[in-house]
Length: 290
Ligand code: SAM
Picture 1 (spheres, protein in one colour):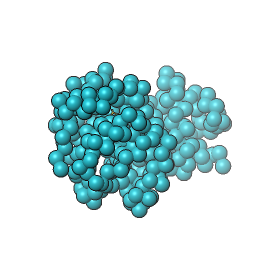
Picture 2 (cartoon, protein in one colour):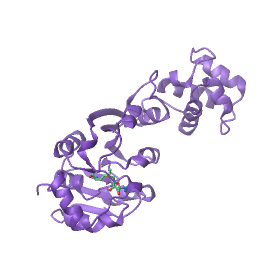
Picture 3 (cartoon, helix red, strand yellow):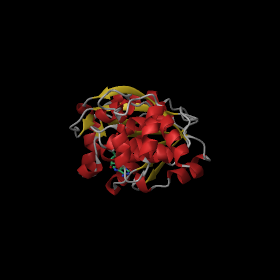
């Protein structure tokens, strides 16, 4: 069954038919460009063997493409006004399951266990931008079995996920994403590909999850606390960031020693450190705290 949505005419028609009003608070910007949809589906490399999790199907535009390409699709949508519309636009597909819930409250681990026997899934979505980070970090931190995440996000956020040290966009999100996955920006997408048009530029990014993290870390939680502490106060040195972190409580001498062990001077800033260096720093500190 060929998708029918993905263009302005049919989108407007279905919205009118159901008298739908956009909810700003849900970050609703529906795709109206078939080229962009084709690009997302191609980048996600979906086959009939795949179970796809879609977050925020909206009126089902991308869901139609996903249903056509995948074995099965589970789509989680918070807005109950969209549920009857999805029933309509997806009526030709028998491999789609719609879940009317807040994705941050869904037990994705359990869903994957029940619906895909715990085998890795592909996540594909045009994300609601106001919760991009909690969605992605939630999936990673809960260790949901995921092969890849191919998502539309705010352009600036895609950049932050992809960059390394020495750039202004580098931060805790870059390190967290790059610990779990290898990022690749697939395409930049301008506001006129959506209805209504977002105020910001967008980009499609694919995160291919690693089987094993690229660095060895004794205590993941400690490393991420160290990372957050060192980016909390961007203008401060790494040593001060770590000293001021209330939840860390690392002895001053250990902080100094650990930074020295990296071969950096005492005034180095967190934003200069690579993932490998944060891993080494965190391992040094965790051993020192024992
Ligand atoms: N996939 C559609 C498309 O590409 O046209 C819609 C994408 S729109 C950017 C984001 C969608 O996520 C909206 O349908 C919105 O209602 C939904 N959404 C927002 N917050 C959500 C949440 N917490 N849980 C599930 N869905 C949510």
